[in-house]
Image 1 (tube, rainbow, N blue to C red):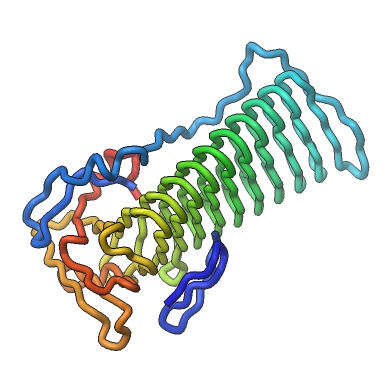
Image 2 (image 1 turned 30 degrees about the vertical axis):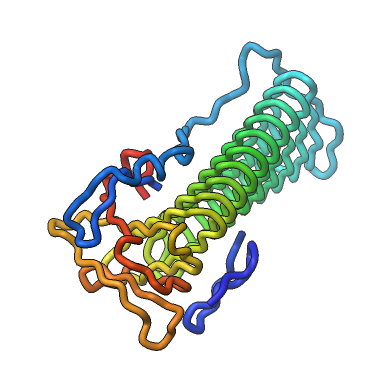
Length: 340
């Protein structure tokens, strides 16, 4: 079994899936499920928590603002330029190109397939209707694609990027970024820094890249449409739901499996005993019964079952023992601003 590259293929039991290049529990259980303690809180939480904000900030009103200059117009397609001040720039119904240049700009592409450059400064870019391309540039920027199949690039700074509707491609770039795919089959790449990636609804592919990242495929997909979650380098935290395909990558990773009864088990491609931890959410009224069983046909495959239900299948985990697996509750995930 194997996983190739950033956007390669994962082959599982004869089926091939395209690959594109939470939270943190503060308690653990013994292998019999009877005792919960605080032994992993510091290890899992330190350096992994992000404070997420939903609101998009407008440019600082203390700066001078203007509405930019229309450099050219052809067939309803505009080229609009800002300047060194904080600009408020708005495209129209055509395929516009808008450049904010310096200052903290607010740019709305309007209708059409637009290309927007924030430039330097802390910018807010809104693609609006159409298949848009957004470049944050320097500074801590906010990018929102809205509707359409959008491409977003944070580049430099601590950026917040949100895809909206459509099949979006989102690239964080440098520094610690927040990437949200929302609806559609999205591809998210964190790049450098300690990033937070959440896919939203649809069949998403998340790649953390370098840094200690948090990946959440989220829900809203059909049973036959798994999310692909690749932590990359660094000590990552990855939340996998039923059917998701996980590659931890380099580093000491925490992989949290959030199973649902009668659904397909999550698949973990590269579990490293002694480095990675597997955590299973459990809110049942009784202590869970954990069993670890090798596959009857594939010596490289191990099944993890809770009360007889297959919750995870792991490749390359020969020697996996109960002490490598911890139970956590849904409430423990929620208290870290992460509900799955």
